[in-house]
Length: 334
Ligand SMILES: O=C(O)CCC(=O)C(=O)O
Ligand SMILES: [Fe+2]
Image (cartoon, rainbow, N blue to C red):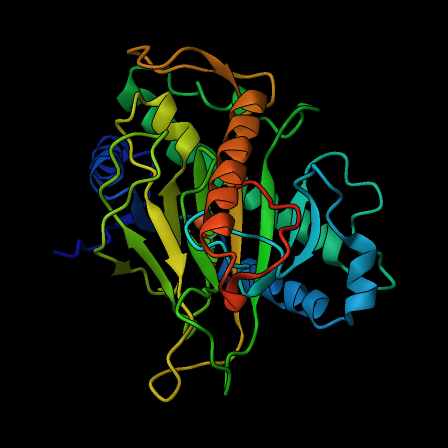
């Protein structure tokens, strides 16, 4: 049975905090995915970020390659590079990831993409504010103090791991892909909380509720579409928050499918994901201490190692299939 994705209105947050908190926690425990409206980010700020990201993606590859993601980092440009353990194939997409620090040489210059840096930073600040509002509700529900998560995601800290990923899925019109190719293969996010901005008319995201533990790869087979909604931000719980909540809040598998020729829009698709990830030095441990303490830095490293091992298994299983003989390059977190 497919689950519906709750829509939660954050308007008048101060006056309706308790009620909003109840709705958020129910959605996070039950589905792990929900949509927020009344979040306060002006639509024009979102539209401008989509436009500037598109301008970047329309640059020739040799210009974008100047900003390629360095090995072992989670910032910069990637194309057809991310491989998910669930598929063993490269996601049909490109992306540019932005952090608050250590971006030397990775910001597109004004000459290449005017306004990209200032617009993106403005957008990140707005997304951050909404993230902290939602995390304050989860903090109280888990028995932490209201502002508990803020210092752990503080953009001013040099070991901060927050990341904006601007995504661009290529035009699929007239293309035929084997069934194991996805715009984004099924995965969970490694982070605490993801804010995902979609564009109306560019659907494809699906979620599979029902995961039991933050360490487990298992997933069911019932997928629910999470279609774009005017003014809405899709929010999902990531593995870090699942662990931090002793598996109470669910980080569920999601994927982006390739659109069906003839039935629907098959042109390019854009999305923007703001990933909240605890500082490298932050210690993650739930109130019930189900898992031993682990730093934000070690958490991401362990998640990458687990992913890498699972991808090797996938690769070994499919070595005879030409459609899977892809080179595995650096894969980003989340
Ligand atoms: O583009 C989307 O709708 C989802 C992207 C996503 O799940 C991710 O990048 O982690
Ligand atoms: Fe994701």
